[in-house]
Image (tube, rainbow, N blue to C red; front, side, top):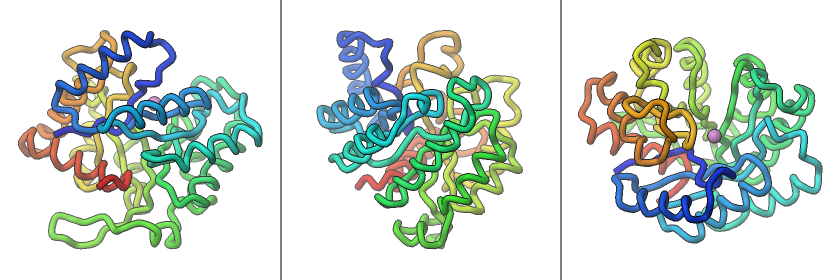
Length: 276
Ligand code: NI
């Protein structure tokens, strides 16, 4: 039982045939659920289509910071329409990417804010992409009320190991690669962190420390396929079944069994996305 909490079956590099083969492979694997995450209009539409066709697939819709240069009010309206469709569980991936700067920073900030506002309006979970923009991502999320008490009141509470209630603002930091200090700041605000393939790299002490320090109730696992392939397949194209290797690493770092890590992160992802 695994939940690949962030993947791209909608990647534009796939032919229909490759995509079908990939879906069959997912069906035959231990992966019970995947979240197909949009990054522009076309990929968001595709994610919704995939969710409609496959019982194990759900969708997130939104504009990646790279693509915000193509956004306007009309496109935002189309995203709003998609967000209301069946099995669309989140707005994402949205955020800031000051590493590549494919869209200029003002444009990225503007549409990041507008899409958080959309998620608040629709009372939906948010999936964040942040690269080389740690402080500003956090600041904008705070300013737009992404961690507000009001927002937290819209969702069922997160449960701790003893059944106690923990904060949950339904904000997911996808492929979290920040420090453990930043991770601690985020979970205090009720955010959730998703761990991806690079945690398996030998020299990635930073993310391994995050997994050791942060309670498992706040962690999900993902592939971000076709990118960020975990060991032992590093260098090959990534795919959802490889989420197993990230879950195995989380288990090792937490000192629990793989089965337990797989089950808990799957339950966490279902709760985060509001899937029963
Ligand atoms: Ni992604």
